Image 1 (tube, helix red, strand yellow):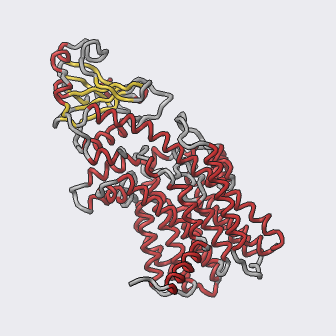
Image 2 (cartoon, rainbow, N blue to C red):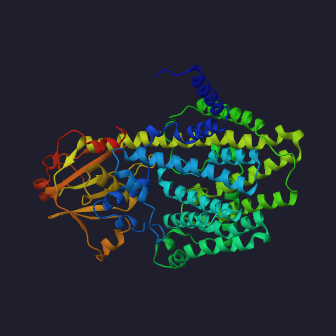
Image 3 (cartoon, rainbow, N blue to C red):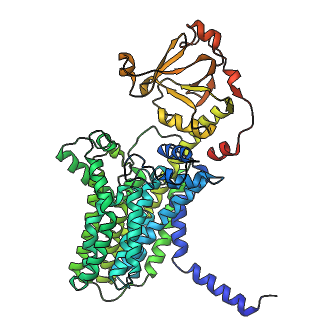
Length: 565
């Protein structure tokens, strides 16, 4: 049946209404900040380890996937990686989950602002756009932070559900708030710094008149989180646990200085684009600087057009109440930064701003929305502040994409050289990846645990015997008549003292690859003759035959998927 002119007109009107809404801008900002280079970004660092853990969990039942990772509360932390590994394209699946979490946080921030300030469309619009483009954290767009972002999303949903119930919703909102809070806390403890501020937000919105509802929802959420609180306390005070290693001893003055530096970073968006902390030498750029600037300019212009048209009530909220609300959000960002200020790698803003970025965005949105209401004649001037956040935020997102794409180009070349040299290995083969110090490169196999993770994933063998041999990582081997006697990271002293057992690699089952830092690839050590490690051993000369351990075959679909081939 042919479509009538009336039906065609109706669809055209709906399309025009959709294009005239804020939705296209939200998705454009998401695309520019996160999704423009998704097909060109692979795994980077600890995301490799998490996918390796997911591979270990395969075949051991669903409960095995709830095994804590690093800390007792991270029981859901690796679950997204297990779900991704069950798909034909695990890397793309993880990227889609990350994009959904990033968009979800922005929409949840807008929902929270609407529940706190009903009818303030401009404030809601600003909250969404600012959160979408808040790219202050080093791990922006990096799959390593997927668990953190999912935990932050669930916290925001828990806060929104609590506000919705307090504002007159049914008891079902309490159940949803408890469920979201539980998922957040059992994914990672990123929500803990924000929890003391939830009562302040509820009382700000409802006042003492709603104390019964506030008390009920807080009691329900508190009972839900009580088991986790006990575990977290024991974890933080365990002298032999992960927290004792991750939390660095620091003087109070140093911690305060770092905390204030982190907090100011939330409100200095130009630094997200031009003054990022540097961890390793940056590879050649993948995205031209002019393209970043053009995309940021277009996004800022589109944002300015939509912001200028966003309606705002004529009657402004009382100044003291608005300043109090903005102050609460600013304080939430400060405490979130303070908690992470003492962690390892915090100096490069490594997962320090994942939650504070949202609270800072809400503080700016509330302040700018109120200022536009209070002094409407200066609307354009006041909107210039969020405009700068959006423009520089988009630039910062593209800058992160550029780093991950350029790094992955090198990592992909490096990893492909392993599986093209040895597409498959006979069972029982041991593989050693050997390199001199590479200070100008950050390798996919940089650390022992990363090399082991990649070997497990690429060869789909959780029992593969591997070692990353590098003097700058504190690993090494010695030739013995039976094979190589090796030690892993942090074992050199006990190996020399004879208090820890050597990891032995028989020559007959050994494959060694050396790294060529000029080409960025691994090459097979095909013969022991002349080798500084093997050449002086008669047993190695007689037994080392790596070609017999390598199985020639095309790359498997899983290898191609992991390497984005």
